[in-house]
Amino acid sequence: AGSSAGVALRVLPAGRVLDGTRGFQPPSDYQLNAALQLARFIDSATDFSEAGLAMLHRSLSVSPAEVRKKFFNDVRACRRRPQIPVEDTPVGRFLTRRSELGMLQRRAIATRIRFALAARGLSIADGFAAMDKSKEGSISSADLHRGMQWLGIKIPPSDLSGLVAVFDTNGDGTVSLQEFRAALQVPGLEEDLEPAAAAAGGG
Image 1 (cartoon, rainbow, N blue to C red):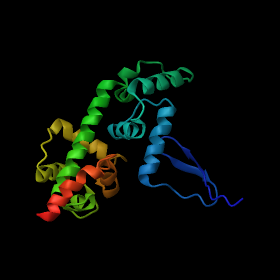
Image 2: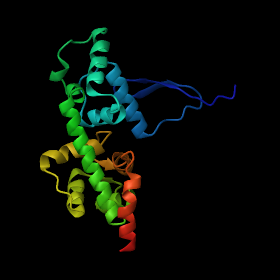
Image 3: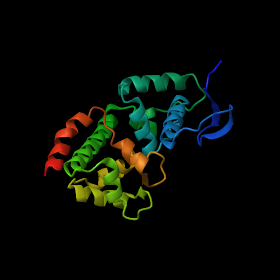
Image 4: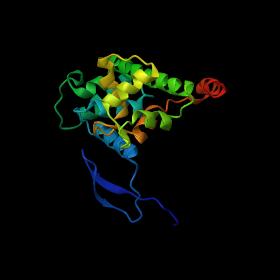
């Protein structure tokens, strides 16, 4: 009695709601996408996009790559799924140490962006607004590239597409403020940013 919990039944991979209880509150786009990608992973899906892999890594990074791989293979072995080597599929990039290092490198770039913004006395929202030249509430890969140049961060073109995928979690080709903010929320970073922000304020 008195419970306010609500649930809904969705169909994969699009996540369309089939039915829901009274009072069900739809999640944010970020929460929905995270849940869908995790559900597809548990369902032994292998055809993940770059953005989908980034979301998986963000959600399951506390588990070592070898643990994730064993879980995926053990579950898939119990299902009627093609038993091809995961290394030959897109999801295999999430299940190997080499791929994990690549994703961590992109997170390191996100940390550099936060420091560059703090050094200019800018919040995440301020940085997004400066890059959003069209003022449409989203930034393109070209906007992000120009933004990196403005911040003085050099990123090879080969790494830029991967960085865009980290930001663009819903895969629509642009980055919203919510996605931009989520990508730059690096655990434990806020305290380290304080000196840079203070120096910018004092200048």
